[in-house]
Every structure is written in structure tokens, then in C-alpha cells.
Length: 331
View 1 (cartoon, rainbow, N blue to C red):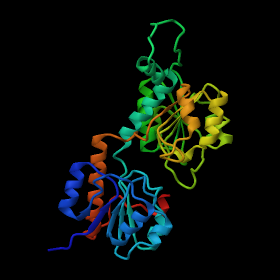
View 2: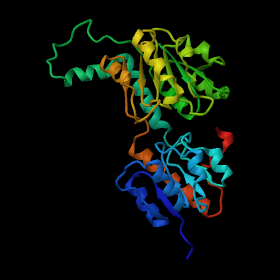
View 3: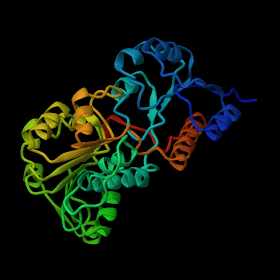
View 4: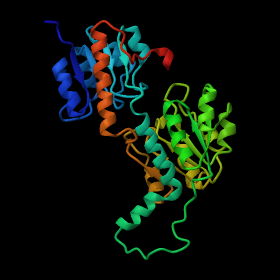
């Protein structure tokens, strides 16, 4: 009987995925779902042939250098892979895979929800009915937000998720603009009626809403720097469901607090899981809508992610190229 690879899973996964993992591999599960400390991760990498981390696990060069010689695959349960030092893993002969493509629609749904929630003040309104005070009833000038229809949406990153956001926004009568490293195919632009900007600066200065949908790479760290954020119009809103580090969070807080930017909808943060107290105060004041990194949190999406992890592990140990292998050239 062929020896089954020893797999260590760092967080709790859907029951169906954990059960199948136990059937296929010698699997250690994290039943308590307590995040692993760096020491615990190091110990896991000393005994595992396959590590299955998530975006909350920082697999840096030091951890990879200390890994045992038996570790051959890091099969991440994640769409992104910026939490793993892919180059260091490659040098050690450790393959890295992720789970792309299955969270596109879920993340785009949440992005669109924030695009609607922030200008229309939905969270503020919901809070009124849950507070310890009586609602006085409808009045013509109370809780006025801004109309979404007819506005210009600037999408930063026109990949799968960016295009899915564009499709949804068009249904609300929003004009689609985008900035991307490369211009998308003409047929995609035509279908989305999208306008390409080769200059991010130029686009930022003209949009009503900015949506961040690009991956976190060394080149996108603080892509929306303080200088760029200052280009946004005072009536504009920013929505980020990608990665917190793409936006200079301290600068964003300062500009929203001063009225230089109208507000923001955030599902990701620069120092997760720590949330800047100033952001929490802005949320209390109705200036921002904050969500706890739940853009991809659907049962269907998590199961599809797990299925990709299973396929990547099986393909690797069957001697085939994993379908979702990550290479440094993708960074």
C-alpha cells in the first residue's frame, strides 16, 4: 500500500474537507481552530510533508529555512499567496500552491455590497433601529446619502474579481473605469463598456468610487499612498476587499477625518487582526463601514477552496504538476 503523505492543517476547515483529508492523507487537524504561533508553525514544518496554511499564517524565509527536509509542499488554503515567501520555498525545493478562481463571485458580491452601503449610509441606518432610542420616523432631510446610479467607478486591478465587480456595478447604472498593469482584451472592455487609464493618478482624480481589487505584491504595497489618496475628490469613496497593505491606512484615516475623502468601505486592514482605533471611531461617526475580512466567507466558497487543496496535494504526490502551483514569476 502506497504511503500516505503526512499533512498538517493549521486552521479548522469545513467538515466535508477535513473528513476527505483524513480519508486520503495522514492528517493532523486543528480542531480547536486556535491560530498557530510561529513556534507551533515551525514545529509543524519539522514533521509535515505537506503544510496547509491560510492567509493568517505568515510563512516567511526564516520558517522555511528551518523546515524539515521532508516538507515538500505548502498547499495554502487561500486565494492570495503574499503570506508565503515563495522564492525562499522554491530555493528549498518546496512547492507552493493556492486556491484561485473559486472566490471571485463571493468577493465581488461583498465589494458591491460595500459600494452600496457606504454612500447610502446603510450601516448607520441599521444602527438607528438597534440603538436604545426611539425612531422619530421619516423626514425629508434625514440620513441623506448619495446616489450610486450615474457615478463613475474606478477599479484598481481588472482581473477576475475586478471584472466581476464591473459586471455588477453596470447593472446599477455605474460607469466603469479601470487601471491595470496591462489593458484587458478589447472584447472585455466592450462587454463592460470600460474605460482604461494607463495612469492611476489620472483615474483617481476623476472617480466617484474607487474599488481595490488587485493582489498584494511587493509592487502594490501602499499603491494608494498618501500622495495618491490626496488625488481623490472630496465626494469620493474608497472600497477595499483585496489586501489592507495596498492602502496607506494611516493616510486614509487622516484624509477621511479631515473631510478630504467622503468615506470608505473596508473588509481588510493593514495590521490584521488589529484594527486601528481611529478607524473604529470613524465607523462610530458613520464615516466608514468596517467588515471583519468576510468578503469570501460563503460555505460554497470554502468547500471549493478545500477541494482545490485536495486536488493540488493529490496531483503533487502522484507525480503530476499541481494545477494551482505558485511561482515567483507570478509575484
